[in-house]
Length: 354
Ligand SMILES: CC(C)(COP(=O)(O)OP(=O)(O)OC[C@H]1O[C@@H](n2cnc3c(N)ncnc32)[C@H](O)[C@@H]1OP(=O)(O)O)[C@@H](O)C(=O)NCCC(=O)NCCS
Image 1 (tube, rainbow, N blue to C red):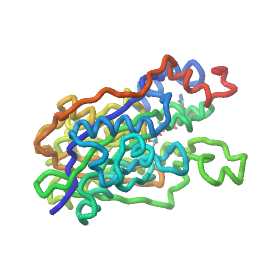
Image 2: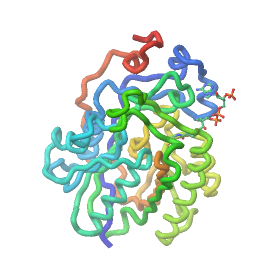
Image 3: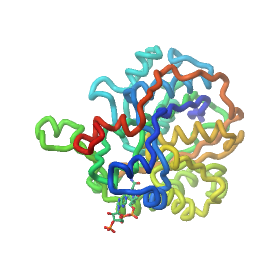
């Protein structure tokens, strides 16, 4: 059966770091609270538009597969923080890198990358696509409201990307399981960034979240998704070699692994360094896991995610023979001499940062 095999990967994490201590200097929080409740030590704040981060990650992924954008039949960018309503972030990536394949953004919030992988796999199975770029890219710092300490400490910016190609071999996406419960739209939402704010100028741009409800649903739903996906692949939970979860909260990741009875050693995490980068978190973690040698040829890699919607999804990927990049490229983006805290100034009027 034709399916999508991952043959390239890359990531871009902005250079400007925002530590818990930095946050504690402007809002009523502290390093101990953030680390113990979420596992986050620091996150990155972007000095460039989201599409630049997406392009940088894509450039690496293409080099890693030794392909060019002209080879791509499809570019999907999973994001809920696009530069503009039109064009898509994917179109900007194509503008920078070239090609004439289809481009689209996909918003399933933090589940977006798993959704995107599954959509690309479906198009590959149908024979309409041979090669695709799937990118998760987010600039959630644009939505950070430093007057709400319960959400402001959780999110960060970044991008990750993979190149997939059609395969008839054992490697590739064996199964995926996507869901959403629309009755839970209000437990995790970002107001003020859509058309409703055009008509109602009083809608502030904020992340509204019922943390405990999201937490409870995340553990249950990611666990259910993983069980169905692994069964649909004709495998068992103990066959999972590496678990790459959406990096939202270390306690959610640990609770999910316990629920699935998965050996903690198989769980890859990097939330301490980047916080919750939404749709970017799984491809960034995947790219880092590969570069650190945490994935071996033939491994069964399980990816599980949840996010606003409430969406959730799981994907079981049999890794191929290659776990190293064919080519490496340096990022071409300009650096910044600003700190993460300084970059947040535009979002922090009245908090003495300007
Ligand atoms: C947000 C989250 C970390 C909060 O952890 P929690 O253990 O549920 O904490 P609570 O919300 O019960 O808050 C406990 C206390 O800490 C306080 N608090 C909240 N944010 C704080 C912060 N940044 N610093 C210090 N104290 C904080 C609260 O005001 C509350 O104080 P009170 O007891 O005096 O009222 C946790 O619920 C969570 O991670 N949920 C899922 C979020 C998520 O994954 N979102 C993204 C989905 S993709």
